[in-house]
Image (cartoon, rainbow, N blue to C red; front, top):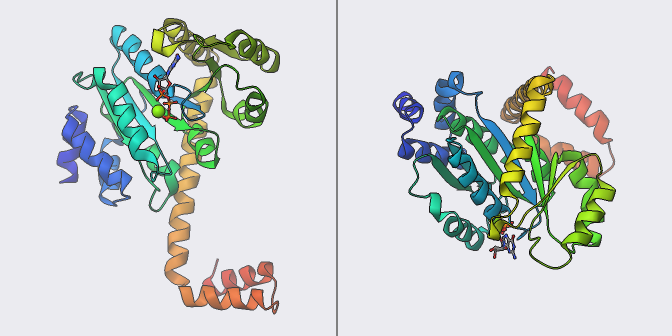
Length: 305
Ligand SMILES: Nc1nc2c(ncn2[C@@H]2O[C@H](COP(=O)(O)OP(=O)(O)OP(=O)(O)O)[C@@H](O)[C@H]2O)c(=O)[nH]1
Ligand SMILES: [Mg+2]
């Protein structure tokens, strides 16, 4: 069964892709067998993270960029990640409607990805979803995330390039976001430049982030989209030329390896260390009969680590 699904995914069958996405979303172990089978066919896609505060226009931008990439004969996969998922229904429905133009296009696969990442965390599930879209032959994969929380920082580390989306008159927010965004962003977009205050925000950003590419867009008016895609492609060509892309890929594989190893080790550990033993240790620590460092050492020794 997994192998049949794998074949169908490689053949670009949308239903197989969608049902495997659901397996990943639910943390279903059957997903692993499929991912193993398709893995040799991955590694070709260009993966672009799009992040920014709620409502800045990320989905609209992705929708417009998708149209531009389609014009360039590229196929596109879109993952709108909503780790909280509780609040997601309205927003996700909105995403679906805004991106509806691409729904009938077989060259575009859109998925709202609501997961708490059973097992390996949200980031691990998103990474698997990216592999899947890659195997299905998508040339460009957009990963939309909201804000700069811990999950987003982790997700930003799964992509080749991060586009950070801001809007005019965010004022102090620009400063507040600086620390978080600078760490992960490659390109800054000031969207909604049709609104007042765009010039001030652009100037602020240029002062703060002079070493970054900064692009002004109005996604709803389709302004600046070609420029944005041009900047993305320019950076991609540069990073391919100077070896940066190669290093990045190696780094992503290294992080994946570490994260999977961690997942496996913790799972094995929990098999041998039941809740009772854990509670007993916690009680000893709470009562200050032992410090946590010594307790860990004692448990590790007992389990033979
Ligand atoms: N004026 C203006 N409005 C825009 C622009 N781009 C998007 N919007 C509007 O801003 C609102 C939010 O757009 P979305 O694309 O859903 O923003 P988002 O960042 O994906 O939102 P979340 O996923 O909920 O965080 C919608 O009402 C859009 O129509 C723009 O360039 N100018
Ligand atoms: Mg959105």
